[in-house]
Image (cartoon, helix red, strand yellow):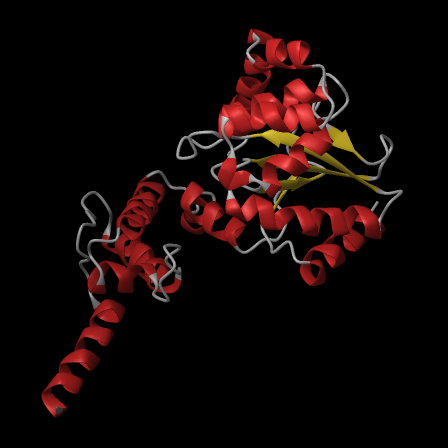
Length: 278
């Protein structure tokens, strides 16, 4: 038992004093520059999610690609006479790790022209939701987003964007059905029906639900299969891909990607803070 503890202690100390690191090529650096790089790698945390410093990660987890990449960035910066710490901080890996801990990311432009929406057009906050009619998490999101609209009836608007996932076989057809219903002013009733019956979505059921909603069926069927409606779904998907949507639901507040929970205890205070900041 004692020998294992001693070995573990020795390993823990190695990365603090090692002059070579697995997978790191220090060739071309002066002795002073090499020691500078090593010292920074001993101080700079690895962004992969582990609790280790970069030098420690190289020694104790040499398979980690992120510490390998960042160590290389540090060496290259030293060779170029650049600020090593700034070079590490500017790397996409470090920025992505920082973003994971932020509730709201930096705002980006999202095209919402022609997308279904509810809430005042002049609302101070526009919530954009990228969603999928067969996504169980999207179903849970409905109540939370409706609660936000009720809590801020004059200040919040919800815009719906389609992002049917390939793993959901009927999601794209459902998206087209909602847009076909929108042409007759019934997007939200069809939206609610599709989510309420998400496990029963099929073309036959969609046609039956359209009848129950009182839609003009020839017009609905024509729109359901029209190139225009299919293109509108495609545009939403392309927009989602462009701005980094990877799953559903994905929520943006005034263009800022929201990375927190949607339950009112978390989401409503974020909306309040956003309103106060305007």
